[in-house]
Amino acid sequence: MTLPVHERIPDGLNHRTGLKNLGVVPVGQPVAKYRYRTRKGYLTCELYDVTQVRPVDPMRVAAGLQATETRKLAEKARRQAACAQAEQDALKMYQHAVDRAVKRFRFWHDDPQTGYLDTETTGLSGQVIEVALVDRHGHMQFHSLVRPTIPVEPEAQAVHDLSDAELADAPSWTEVAQQLRPWLDGRRIVAFNADFDQARLKTSDEAHGLPPQDNPPIWRCAMEAFGPLHGDWSDYHGDWRWASLLGACRQMGVPPEAATHRALGGAQALARLVSAVATREWPVLTVADVPKDFVEWPE
Image (tube, rainbow, N blue to C red; front, side):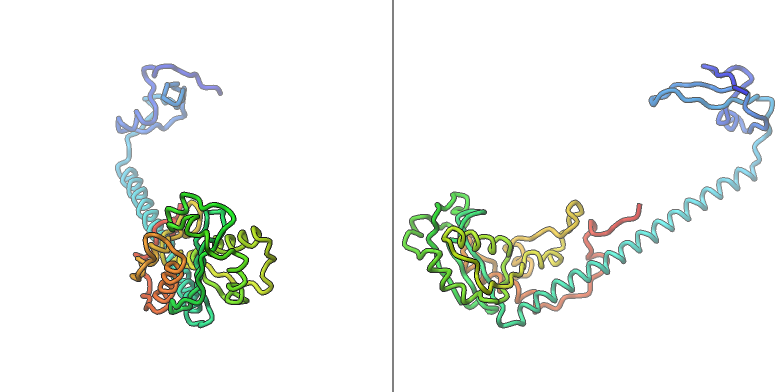
């Protein structure tokens, strides 16, 4: 049977909430509907005969309230347990990431053949104008300025303070590469942002028509490896945010490179950073150490 719909509540009828406020509940079937307006549009509710009611049972009300409270407490306990488990899972993954990072730094540091390289360039996509290679103790193995075939960009010069005039009498990349390549030959080379340095060497090779190195170095990136130790997780990218070499050195308490970056100072700062990470006694992490964005909180 289709129930009549009213725009106002007729005398002798009331909805369930209205009856509840009067201390009664309906015992019969709804006899009509009430259509009312809300900010989301029109809604309807059922109306009951006010004579077909019974008093609210206090025991039933109390039992209902108790059941509701029990459900709330159970849900709160479940949520707390889920959050605690999420924190423990994150701690386990974070500890693994830190342990793996420290292991990489120790492996590099313990290998006397590993070299630490830094470059200065004409620009972010330009050619090498200075290159330096040091051993794990920071002792210089190779260092040279380079005369590029393109001008130094003003933004780059502001970083390293090397001008075209200062590079005019420097050897060409062809000369420098001939001396540098034996030092790199098949060797593990650590750089801070290795992709950048490797690409800039390649750009210089191409600009001078040099073929790829027959036995190229094995590149390793200290910037990427330091990510978990820096401890800044990007939930948006799902990866660790990178620290600068300056920031990483300061975090580890070692002398950073100079404010005006130069290749030799950068390579030596990198060697100090690797040594500091490798020789430090890293404490066992706790939940308080885990970056909050690293925790996958339950819904």
